[in-house]
Length: 153
Ligand code: NI
Image (cartoon, protein in one colour):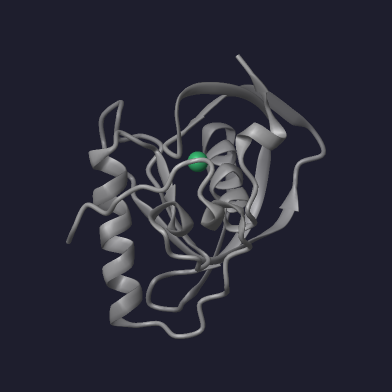
């Protein structure tokens, strides 16, 4: 495992739509492990592959580790299946936009479909911070940053 170099706002790779993952196996496993290691080292709750210079549809989250237990989840080819009709407005930071905070509106829950790193299809509903986090990371896969969607605090 390795801590990878982060890409920052202004880097064109953060503005590209990332490509779907079509081949699973060792390269995906390695990148996912590196994404987790890089996210924890940078004190983040989520990290998407384009943020380390890899334009593929993968991200990792762990919304609880800062408060105690780790709950790492890795997402490959994620997509929103359904989103709540109501939104929540809250502050978000981004490892690619250091030292700035933006208030962003997100659905209060989202139903997400994705593949595990082994290629197994998963679905789950994410609420609250979980919904915020997966929506933020999914935006990264579409070249969207909180500078676009939010209001700086
Ligand atoms: Ni971010």
